[in-house]
Amino acid sequence: MFTTLTAPSCGPVHNRPTDAGGVLWPGRCGKRHEPADALLGTPLDPKTYDYPGAVLFNAHAGALWARFTIYLRREIAARLGLTQKAARAVLRVSFAKVAEYQKRRLVHFHAVIRLDGPDGSTQPPPPSATVTLLADAIRAAARVSIRESARTRSGNANSPGANSSTCARSAPTWPSTPPSPPTPPAFSTAPCSAAPARDAA
Ligand SMILES: [Zn+2]
Image 1 (cartoon, protein in one colour):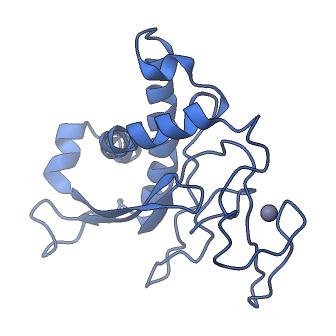
Image 2 (cartoon, protein in one colour):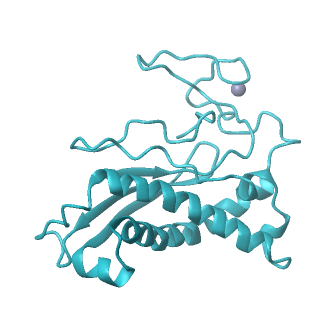
């Protein structure tokens, strides 16, 4: 399954929305920006943009991904009605990911997440490990991983996250784009960034 994990909004930025036919629409500022416009991805209002949150999100993106993989295995096992140890005995969860910067200079991840039998790609996963189950588990793991990391940071006055504001602390989810539908090849064509911030690279 192809999944995109994107940072929450830190505030509106100059964007360059296009419709399905590739027609350029005015961005949030009301202007149509050229593709190379240096304003793209920069805040509409630097006074209110959550710069600390943006910096903290990038600084913690690697840890956030690591937590996501831990929680995803947990969520899959729970949905199968198994302990994590029992789940490992019947299936393997594999990841391939790339990290990219969006125009707004926040890290996001594209990941291929795959389920196989315990010995790997030569074995199918158990029939109960469906695409729907995996999609549900991905959504749940993305929600939990950012909530837990926000709680950890805000609970420690010495951690940099303790001073962060809206972007890093209050967002309920990564949020991720919906996992792609169960039709091969399952690559998502959804915009990379979370609505309404259609400012992905
Ligand atoms: Zn603009």
